[in-house]
Image (tube, rainbow, N blue to C red):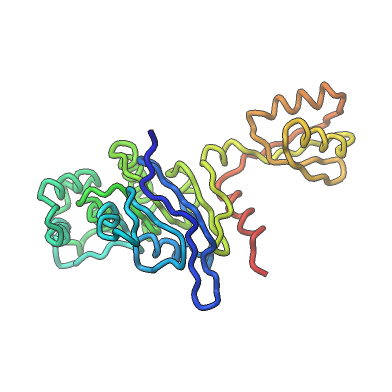
Length: 303
C-alpha cells in the first residue's frame, strides 16, 4: 500500500491583496522522487517555505507522515531533512565534527546514525578532513548527510546541484535515487536543471502563477511525442483523431500535428490507412520534460 509522506491540500497564500499561491495540491509517496518545477516568480519558493514551516499558509493543510504542521509542528518536522540553497558548514571543522555538532542538538541522533549517513553519501574516506579543503561536491555530500542523520522520511532539496560539475551532479543524482529506492525516503526536489530532474525523478509537478498546471509521471512525459502527418483531407483526419482516440490536433495546410502516446501511433496510422487517407509522410519527435515545461509555462505567461 502506498503511503503519503507529504500531502499538501488546497494550499493558498495571500500577502496583502496579492494571491501568491492558489489552492495547490501535492502528494509524495514513500520511496518516490517528485520534481517541483516553476519559473522565477511562479510561487515555488513560497510553497517550499510553507512546507518547511518558515511561512504560514493563508488556508489549506500540509501534513507530513500524517502530522499537520499547523497542529503538530514538532512531530511533522521531525520527519523532514532538507538542503535549502546549499549546506551550511563550518570550514574550520572537519565534516564529521560538523555532523556531530548538528547531531548534538537532537537527543535522538547517535554516533551510529552519523556513521550510517556518512556511508550513505560516500564520504567515508574524507569525512575527517577539514571542510575548507572540500570540493563543492564533497560539501554537498556532507550537507546531504546532515539532512539524513535523524533518519527523515521526507527529504527536501532546493537547487541541490548548484555549483557542481557534471561528475558531481551525476554522483549526487545516484545517491538520491539510492536513498529513495533502498531506504524508502520520499524526496521533493526543486531545480532549474530540468534535464537532470528528468533522469532523477518519478513524477513532476509544474507550478506557474501560483497554480499547479501539470501533475504527471516522467514516464508519461517521455512516452508522448509530437507527431506531424502530411495527409490529404487533414480536416477529416482531425475529426477521426478526436472521435476515435480523444487526441486534439492542429492543422497547417496539409499538415496535421498532435501530441500522441507513441505506443498508440501504429494503431492510429493503421486506422487512418484503413479509412482511406493518403499519408505522404509521418514525422514524430519524442518530447522531453524541458519541452513540456517550456510549452506549459509559456502558455501560462502573465500578461
